Image 1: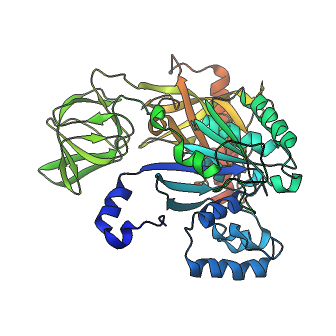
Image 2: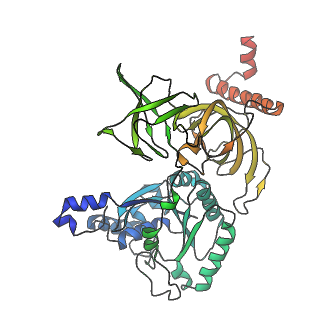
Image 3: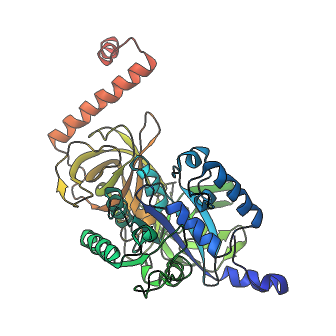
Length: 478
């Protein structure tokens, strides 16, 4: 929904033009369960007068049914749409809401707080520019608060607003607010978050959300909405070098071959010399084609089709880059941070499917360099990663791929791991760097790979031949 504007009635074209030119801020609300994330989003929409009257009436009726806010309107129901969410008063899946103010447009991702659904939170944070981390004033910084903050840091979110919620339940105590601020900053010293702001709020009552509260005279800072409207994103410009992961080769007839994808970084013009990686062949851009016709220029975020002057071999999963600019790494072995999302723990040496940019390639995690404790950020040795655990690992792919460090470019430095048997997304990964001598693997690595193959073979045998064992298959093949 959009904000109220007099232009809507008097000059609709002028309003649409004004709306089109606004900045877009994608942000996430996260934190521990019951910290008030969904209520906060509902309050933002309600106090900004961005809710239709019939929708508000429906929410008021449902509030009487579920009665989670002492007979007041439960604004969390604006976001929590699943029946299970409303019955339990929790968020289970990521919910997206769209709205705008006079200053900019917003896309909100409301993410669950339960540890069980941390993987959903990581999904929501992967495309955001800012995170609003809620903390219950009565409980302070919790384990899930630290986990979400660490994931936000790993995913390259550079702006964090710590909203200390439910201040009305602690009589808007400045001491409570200052203690939480001190505890969080002490933890955040080990995180890569350059911009952290704090604001005391009551999402249920509306204090310091859109309008300043008179109940916290000691706080002279901006409201949450004001912070959202004024945060500067220009300094977060992505990698300047051109990157186009090829997602599709468009071949509608004999006279046209186009390479489709969304530009992950940089810009491109017809006549520019590009190189296809990992192959290394070069050519010049003939045209930039879109559904609206050819373009003289394209930049990061645009979905385009490039045609080249020469017929060179480019496939889905390759990457087009500018010749002469900073080149991505091309390797088969890399180090990365992993957020493990599967109920089944990570198995060293097991073959998984890796999706990096537009490329799909099999590979394995050859080593867990460290498991990271979200409370202390301390690294420790580990032989496996369980659900919601975070680690630094070494990945060995079965074919070379082009990539950047995730801190330089999200679009070419992020990947997911898919279990080849269950087809479930097992992990989200953020590339740290390439590893030299990618073709060299130790005897221990090969032994782990063989053991993982045996486990995988046994799983397949049990699935299709429940009365056999892997050794029986081997004997029959022999």
